[in-house]
Image (cartoon, rainbow, N blue to C red; front, side, top):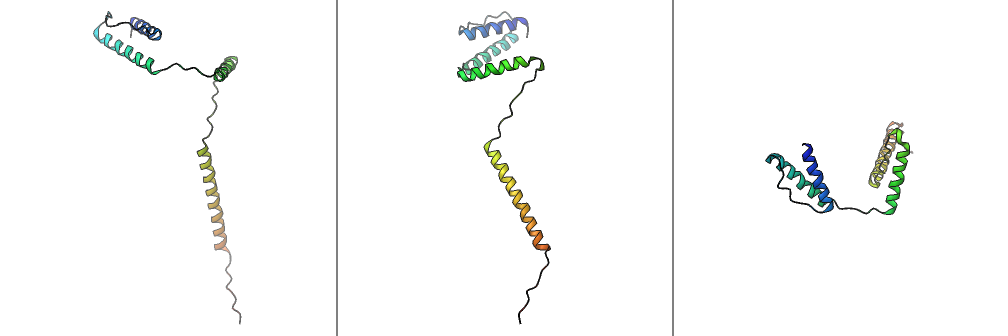
Length: 127
């Protein structure tokens, strides 16, 4: 893709943003390049239509501002710290149940081993 193609795409993006898209069929380029460029322009229009502007809450804006300022202050380290996701409730419950089952299995094994290894005393018969 040449500089002229990039210029045409940039102009088209500006037109999409200002909502004044003009006819682009009279581009001065070979048909293959024109087809590719028109395809990209069509894709840009579809993406623009799919993406809707959002208006974040003031609390989100403030948190983002503080996070960005904190990152800028760290500057030289260039490390981005990402908070690990909190474990889902179901995972924690499943892990607790799994641990309890394993513990009960261990206790049952110990009891059975104890019962099998203890000496057997026949009952005395009373005369």
